[in-house]
Figure 1 (cartoon, helix red, strand yellow):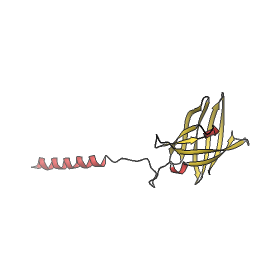
Figure 2 (figure 1 turned 120 degrees about the horizontal axis):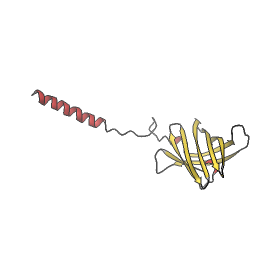
Figure 3 (figure 1 turned 135 degrees about the vertical axis):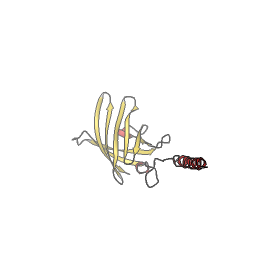
Figure 4 (figure 1 turned 60 degrees about the horizontal axis):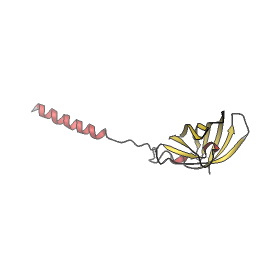
Amino acid sequence: MKSGKISIWALFFLVALAFTSCVIDEDTDPDGGDVRDKFTGSWRFTETEGFKSDLGISYTVTITYDPGNSSQVLLRNFANAGGNYSAYGIVTSNRITVPAQELAPGFLVSGSGSSSGQDLMDWDYTIAAGGDQNYYTATASRQ
């Protein structure tokens, strides 16, 4: 009789453990939305080459959801590569990381940007083209 009670309790414990261990964690922010939401849209990048240069340009980057990966975004015209070229970026809670990738033949980019306000981002990135490698900083503001 005693062994029957132990078996029932052991079975109950195993069933309870099985149900609690099957909870699926989603990669969403605490408010229940997609962590990429705050980054999507059109952004005006104002970039400066190097750390002390006052030579810079402004251009638009459009950030959209990557339909093939729920933790990535696509950055069209990143590094002013042209509207036909998109880099992909990996999104974490407050940052987009653009791993090293070739946007066009001989045009390599890498870098990261972080949210610095509701509609602002700060970026640091590298462009390698034609054998030269240049470092850039940029401020991006939502349009």
